[in-house]
Image (tube, rainbow, N blue to C red; front, side, top):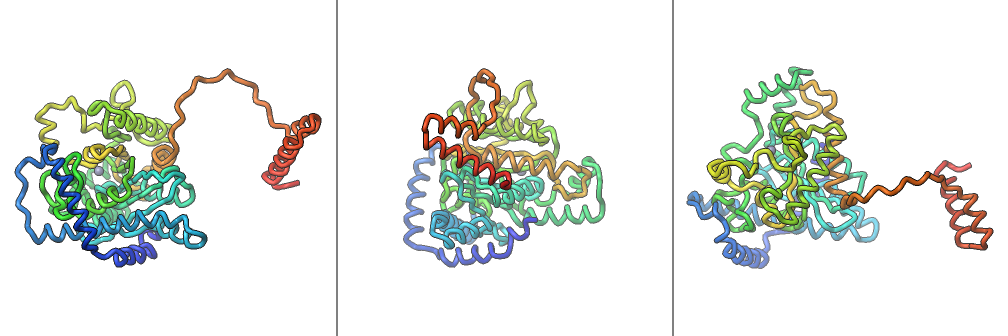
Length: 441
Ligand SMILES: [Zn+2]
């Protein structure tokens, strides 16, 4: 379904983009200077960076810096390309088609291309969608792929940047394992799938020898240093996350949704960062309202969101982020590094985390005839609410009025009766329009 999107012409565009944006000495110098200044400002604020950082191999730092610069350049070029969609036909349309088909913005640690797709919206404000952070979470990738397909035919309200597979190699290795399982068995129970998956070691969750992909972000409030791209713990950041950070820096999204999947149905849901229980500010209130609106609609459409209803009321608090946890637990959690949900809000961005219930796709070995509809519905909720226009604030229900069907003939007659030429013309035009809609007489 999405093969055509992932490969083909998109690859050519990506290659061209990299050639069109060679390392640019003066740009790098000025950006590095800017980052150094920002780094100095934030140095005091980062408790994790104050801890003892690991010793790094200078050759590996140099390679990572090169990847960070290349991704930053590709993302900058992509963010400028979006303004060319306004060019006269056919140029603007061609640019738009290429942006939608996907452009390479980096590589993963095995050299596989990381693709970003851009969809111009009704407004220029940017919302980002990321999936495939954990390659094992195949259902989350399918939601992003279904969303991508929906966006091909429905213009979003926000301008959208979507990366359906942030760690493409990890996603593909897990997809291969799932395909092999589906070839050997079909219609198995979820419990059986869970056993087999756990026995196989949850293939694709992270890159070999690397930290958790979602614990590799800079310390809170800190920008990425392109010349020394390390996370809050002083470890080199994987190239996929460098590509993501490049996109965030170039497009400055005001909101980002990261689509994951949990290994059960009880914790599935839609969660908000920052959360009001952690930071009681406007951003937290807004992200909370957004996540709950999405979760409620998702439930109506048959999506698993039990994780949003753990207490008596709806909650957007991520199950693993309860601030009531002990200081020891929080310390242990922080020692792993910074997550996107922690780092994003420190940059003024709302981060919504979607946790699909279970990891399997709709074409997996698992017997779940409702799976395709569920994943399609989750994509629809993201498109309509997260990427859609602001939700209308509830207004008091007006007194019911009897529905009166529009009677164009009567309107025309009444208008003619009072000599209102404009109203007569409007009514006649409405009648012609309606006949057109009905297929004509
Ligand atoms: Zn995940």
